[in-house]
Each structure stands twice: as structure tokens, then as C-alpha cells.
Image 1 (tube, rainbow, N blue to C red):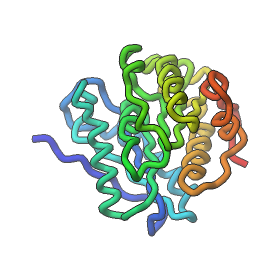
Image 2 (cartoon, one colour):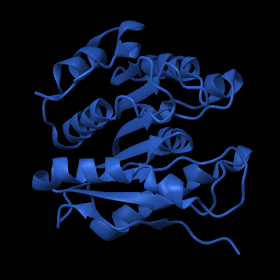
Image 3 (cartoon, one colour):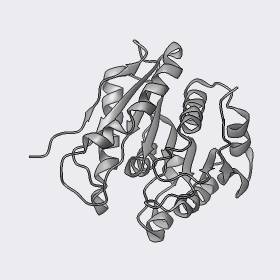
Image 4 (tube, rainbow, N blue to C red):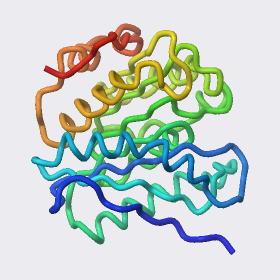
Length: 240
């Protein structure tokens, strides 16, 4: 029997003025229960966001999927993201939400962005199985949202060129789209983890609370393609 999707334990502020939903990695096809390791892989990011935004009222939750697969047209992870958004509204009311996903969770976050509560999307190494999927993935739901994609140039699981192609299409529908490349890093973005966490916190706090973005993020959002979609993440990046 498939378990229902659920939200993990809240971190961050005691009272929510905004929520970040963390969408973990997954698999292309699988009806098995989600991996605990996949959920654990976003805990450091959830804690970092919770600490960074605690004073402003940011609460973070990790989404626990019904199963670990995307599963083709079923798009199970995206449907679980949609359920999680409705659950946030039920628990916290009319608060702005940032969807933050990695791998399969990155694609789910992008797909679920049309919900009225969503103000921003952060997709880390989003999983797109092939060029056909990248070129067919919907982007209209991203209109009116702030969108940041981050991808390692040495990613051997998800092709960084496919996230670039998706970003190009999204930028045509929405000017508030940018993409950072983490040179020499792989799928997990482990080599430059401090910089990735700092970039994520800067973007999420800026998009949810109207704080000024750091100069690199502001420049990336303002720059036309390809510059703003191939922005290098500098070693030692930290918001001012």
C-alpha cells in the first residue's frame, strides 16, 4: 500500500510568515517507498534556509514523496509538490512559498510553480531525462515567479545543457529567470557546497521577503541570454 505524501518536521521560525518547501531527489521510474538518504540530502539546505530566514519568519519543510519515482506521465513528484502546497495553505494560510528542489525534486518544483502561493523556484541540478523532455517541459507556469537554476558543469547524471535549454525557454516567458553554473562540480554540488548554500539563502530570502539580492544574482537576473543563464558561481561567494 502506497503511503501518502507528507511534510517533514518544520525548521526555522516559530511562526510562519513564509515557507520554503524542499523537494528531494528521486528516480526516473520506481514505485518503491522514498529513500531516507534522498530526504537527508536536502536537510543541510533546509537548516541553512531556516537559520538564514528565522528572524523574518521563514519556516522550511522537506516533502516526503509517496514513492521515489517520477514515473513518466504520472509525474508523481510534481503531484506531491502540489499536495504539499495545499497543505502549506491549510496549515499557515496565505503565506508566500519558495519551492526548492534538487534532481527529480528540481523538475517537480519547476512543474508545480503555477500554484498561486508560489513566488519563487530554486532548481538545483534539475533532472531532465533527455533533450525531448527539456524542450517539451512546460514553462508558462513560471510566469510571475522568480526562478533560479543551478547546475554543475561536470554533472554526469543530469545534463547541464538540458537545464540551460529549459532556462532559455523559461526566460522568453519570464524575465525573472537566471541560471548559475558551478564549474568543475558534479551532480551533488559537493565541491562548492558553501557557495551553493549561500546562493540558495540569498535567492530565497530575496524572493520571499523583498530583500536586495546579492550583486551576482541581481546581475544574472538582469542580463540577457546567454550571460544571465551561464553565470559562474564564484569560489567564496557570500551575500554582502
